[in-house]
Length: 399
Image (cartoon, rainbow, N blue to C red):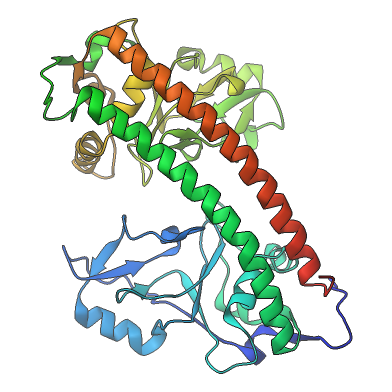
């Protein structure tokens, strides 16, 4: 693996210019409130997500700090699962880390922003792909990160590269922010038209979900598990494809007609709402997009097929509403051995059912917002391509 760089640059081993550490290897006791314990899942492209964290005691936090104190200017990097998402720390609160690498640059030869962008280059990803371990759960070790070979230009050039990529990243951030604001608009319209679905502040008719559905059911893993998956064929929807209000095509699996015939009781149709019913992603909800059909679901995903009295857009947004989401999560946490929601529990959910014309008007408004979101996503895709091109050239000294 080689990288062509200018004569004034050097190729160095990461550990020779950066102090590379990782977070705690222990599992501190959870507390109801305290210091956030940030793990790989909390590192997002837009920053650290504190909305879904475990809290630990001040004492445990202090013990972790002896090994991996996090300071402003340090860089965090997810070591498990979705590896990467590097970010420069700008602390507004104390926190500890687990399953997260900590790059401490201090007074080193490396500019933090330059190093952050470097960590997401294809050149480094190729090195990590060679070294990455794990079957279903990918991970990189501390030594793998220490052994990374990185291009190191003079400090002034590092700052120039970081400034150029900062401008491109700022544009991407604005587009992502706009998409997030459109999601908030949908929720605002929902509360304006229907009120809180748990308190039923508008006084709608309330009934159990089973009364307004044609089907509620989950599937199974095909015989042979992952080995049964094909390059093309019938889509097999898994929990990783179901996001909150969005279907992810990433890692969509496919099965052949023979395997699909064994799952004929869970054929997915246009208008179905998908609900994750087990595991860490329990209670995530989205509508199925037509372009993944024909499809089946595995045992971790439930199909909810509404009757004509219940619009699927209204149903999806109701299940996504924060107060209703909490009901789903509490239901799942009551499981005997793991987080799970049963078919019977889904059928018994009490839901407000506004007049159908009002539901359809809501769906029309959401459709208009989704059209705007499509435009923003296309623009973001173009910005992502521009950023990738700049990044490719930057770390070869071609800017």
